[in-house]
Image (cartoon, rainbow, N blue to C red; front, top):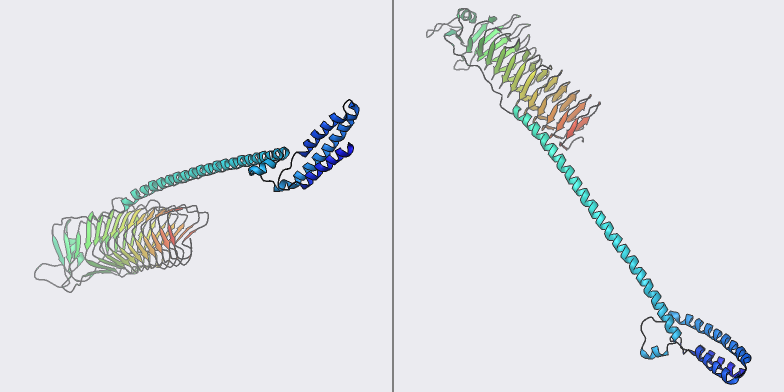
Length: 508
C-alpha cells in the first residue's frame, strides 16, 4: 500500500510540474488527501495505530505538495492577470489561486485607495494654499491701494495749501502811482520863449513855486542840487527830436533830496557826475519817479531811507551805470519798482533791506556787477515777480540774513554766478525759470524756503544745491540738463524733496 501511496504522490507531483505556467492547477493536494483517507479506512480498519501513522505520512506529503504548489504560484505570479479571464480559464483556476488573486486584487485596491487619499489630500492642500495666496495678494493689493490713496490725498492737500499761498503771489503788482492835481504851471527853458514866461534855472522856478505847482522843464542841461520840501511836480518836456531835460550835479549832494509830502519827477534825465552822492534821495513823504533815466557816478541812482510813511514809486524808468546800487531802499519805507530797466550798476541793481516793504515787478534787471536783486534782513517784506534778470556778475537774485521774500514768475538767466542764492533765508520761490547761469541754478545755504514748480535747466553747476543744514521744501520742480548733479543735498541738510521731474545732465 505504501507503494500505491508513493505512486499517488508522484502522480500529484507530476501534475504540479506539468501545470500551465499562466493558469491555475487542479487542487491535487486536497484530492490526494481525500484518496489517502479513503484508503486508510479500507486498509487499516480496526487498526487505529497503523491508520494514525499512515495519516501522519499523508499529512507530511500534503505539506510538501503545498509547499511546491506555493513555490509554483510565486513563479507564475508576475504573469498573473488581475482582470477577469474567460470562462474556460476561470474553470481551470484552483481555489487557492483564486484566493491569491483576490488577495492581490484587494491589496492593489487598497493601495489605489490609499494613493487616491494621498492625492486628494495634496489637492486639498494645494487648493488651500492657492486660496491663502489669493487672499494674501488681495490683502496686499488693498493695502497698497489704500496707502497710495492716502499718499495722494496728503499730496493733494499739501499742493492745495501751496496753491492757495501762491495764488496770492500771482496777483498783478498794483502800481498805485499817486495822482495829484497841481495848481499852477511854471516853465524852465535854456532859451527865452515868447509863448510862455520861463525861468532860466530849475532853482529859480523851485524858489518861486508853491505847494501843488508843476514845473515843466524844456530840453537842455541844468545844474541842480536841491531839497524839495514842497508838494511839487517836475516834468521834463521833450522836443520834436526827442531831446529831454538833463539835470546834472558835480557835487557831493543828491540832485533831488525829496522831503515833501507829495512829489513827482517825470520824463527827465538825472545824472550825478560828482565823486560821491546819489542822483535822487528820498527821506520823507511820497515820491514818484516815472519815465526818467537816472545814473550816478559817485553813489546810488535812487536811495530811500526813512521811517514809516515814506513811499517811493519808480515806474517805467532806467537806472543805469551807477557807482553803487541802482536802487537802494532801507529803513521802513514802502517801495514799488515796476516796469523799469536797471542795468550796468556796480553794486546791486536793486537792494532792499531793513523794514522795507517792497514790490518789484515786471522789470528788466541785467548786466549788473553784483547781484541783480538783493533782499536782506528778517524784517524786510518783499515780493519779486515777473522780472527778467539776466547777465549779472553776482547771483541773479540774492536773499540773505533771514529775509523771507516771495519770488515768483521771474526769468533768471545768463548770469555769471548762481541763479538764485538763498543764504540763511526763507520765503517762497515759485514758478521761476532759471537757466544758463554760470554756477548752480538755486543755491540754498542754511535756508528754509519753499521751492516749488520752478523750471531749472542748463546751468553750469548743479540744478539745486541744498547745503549747510538747509530745511527746504522742494516740490513740483523740473530740474534737468546740468553740468553737475541736478539736485545735490549735503552738509547736514534735511529737505523735503518730492514730486520733482529730474531729467538729463549730471544725474539725480
